[in-house]
Image (cartoon, rainbow, N blue to C red):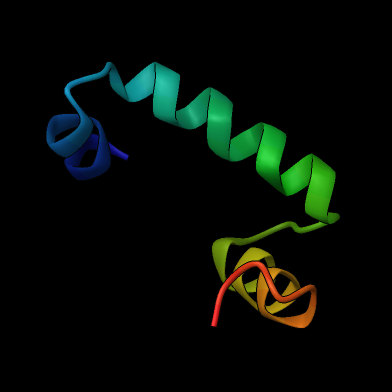
Length: 45
């Protein structure tokens, strides 16, 4: 989260919040689950 926050010029807490919301929406518990679901839905190639 720290690296993502640094690159986007936001706080690590902002990244944490957005990641948590994405996990909720995708029904994921881990980043790998979120990526798999996003691929399944055609959001990410």
